[in-house]
Image (cartoon, rainbow, N blue to C red; front, side, top):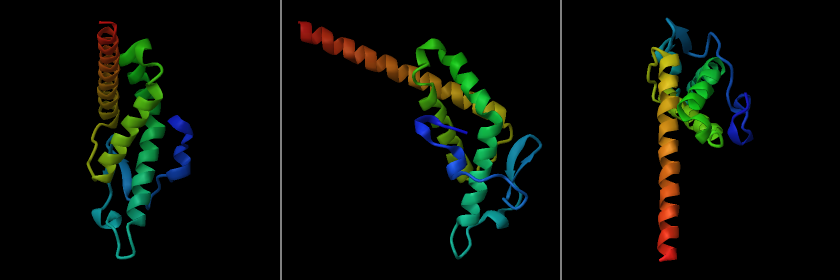
Length: 141
């Protein structure tokens, strides 16, 4: 899957498998066993791989939902920012997985996260436009 700025999720993420330590259980993403995913003395490679696999699975499964929520919440006003907003949502999801947080309802979580980040992006853009208009008005005085 291609993300904004040319990044391929397949480049950095593996695929979810039975030994990854993560599983879709009851519609939610859960770790199968804490012991399997804790870092070993050699490093945290198994943990990182299972987290990457879980992220890849969620992005593959819910990527369209994320993009739909961004378009619906922001309309044409955020069309230029949609890829950036999507990337922020995915980064936030990655951070949740890295913290070993359980996401019981991933569709609901990702929809709300996409709407929240879209609203934040619209506010930032409006603040920038207002600041630019104020600076322009001060320059005219």
